[in-house]
Image (cartoon, helix red, strand yellow):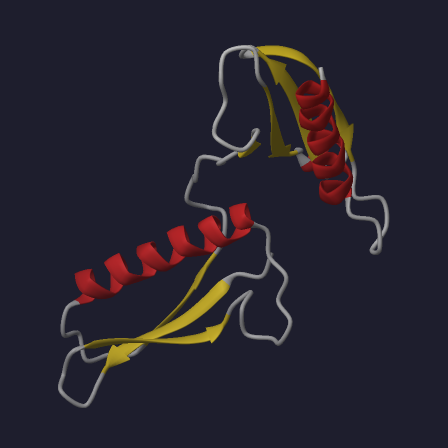
Length: 148
């Protein structure tokens, strides 16, 4: 992902000012996964902290922040039957799959809180969305449990 390039300076009132010169969001149609948005947010918080630490330094300073350099815990996407997960119910979890493992998504299927199975859903081509396939299989898992 592109880094966030900024210029630290002061606004007309003499307060710290940050100009974002380049970022993953500076082009139209930026498509980002929720984890990528969290990584961008963490980088922006670091930029804000660094701006505050500079105080009223009158010299402009340019700096580049690598998105993902600040560790952000992954937040799994969890699906469950309407009304919440109940005793004897099924649920599923979709997690982003590591790029080293081929990228895409992992699906875990649970029943009564126990892992029962799952699979890996790579994003094979630009038009193939492994997430949609994992979500479809997860929903089928829930639907099959509701029919029993």
